[in-house]
Image (cartoon, rainbow, N blue to C red):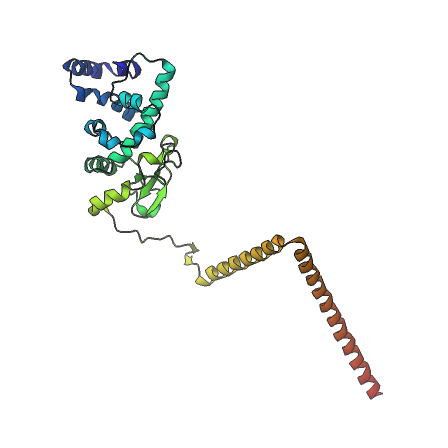
Length: 283
């Protein structure tokens, strides 16, 4: 078989597969490429999609328009790919098969059986634990920020703090989020509501020498922020004015400053005149 040449396996499993091959059971063939794919480092987030699900073409509706060399990729997944294929073409089909399996996987994990398989991985913390200290190592679930392939990589969702995080491993961080979908973790907790933990109310409280920061300090920081934002908007508005308007605004500003100086000078002169008059009266 092609998979025996492309994906070598230990002698113990090889002998078992030879027996399965000679038995002539089509259902046994489907496992080989999938087993290799799931055993590859970086694919630990994926579960095994049931072969019956893959072989039911209704479940694959529309995927033929999203995957290049769809038929060959599907044949590779089900271990029915023609062996008489050059190496370059086989590499292209291999990439398409990975993409196709990921898209099938996203559909499968929101089915009853798919949710059951992902639940087992969730219980074993196969997706990691929440890095937030106050979540106390709560297990995570993969989630997408977009269902469109090649847009966003997979993220990890914590149902305790209801926030998302990047995977620690670079291999996992490069997985397309569309292979899990935006709905999966929320669908899981709809089906298994008993798994939803109480929402975390623990919050870190900043302290200095054991004392909590006073609310007035927060208010002052907020006021400073509003003041800086207002100043930035005013400056942006002045810079956005036409040249004549900006020149006029600057001229008005200079005129105002000059008038202010003139008024100050007039007030000073009036004060001097008053003091002089008063001295004359005294004399």
